[in-house]
Length: 282
Image (cartoon, rainbow, N blue to C red; front, side, top):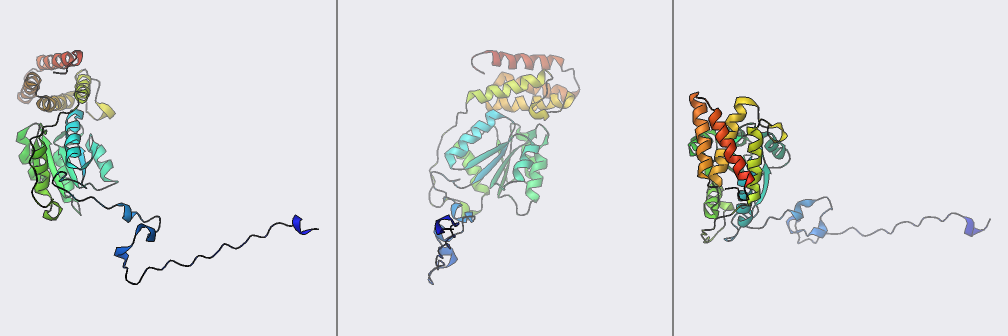
């Protein structure tokens, strides 16, 4: 047998000398090359807030069922430097909170599967606590309920002023996380995409027709009527639609006093359908 028919003997891998950290470098001075590949700490450097982007580095979880309100909040976060994630129900919010801890949570008080006050109380009791918890609603009379549950502040809808939004978040942040130096005040008002408003109106039309909400979140019957009245009242306030707001208020009032509501439901349904049928939602 000749040598060229023998299986090749594997050559030993060359031994690389262990990388030594200079004596004058501490772990705090390590570069990315010094870190093992599974150590992600080098990639988690958060940008510092600035006068132009005072919420830079923050992650906002918005718990909001209205897509139109969510679009406005997305624009506010974008202008402020914050990242945003959205949950459209209590159930979805719990899924988010099980996987990460946001810096800021903004909770709508009327959600399809329960009260935002319950989630606020839950967040306020967490250890460690979420840094900023804000309630929001189109009904100003829900502000005391949000604060009593543990919210740091309250955003009255429509939330469209960049200055007011930033002020509410910054007021609840620890001083060390606020940007230093003067901050330019802006009169900017965000203009959310009107297609998001149409999606809200389509959802309401389905609820009024008894089709139920998305993901089965909205309960049927009387509870669904209460929910759609609150939902459309908030949507009307955000979109500055006075006629729709008045119709939603009438339905809520007559429900609360035990009056006949069929005429209210018919009126509200007609208004929603008219806005969906027209080229412009309002």
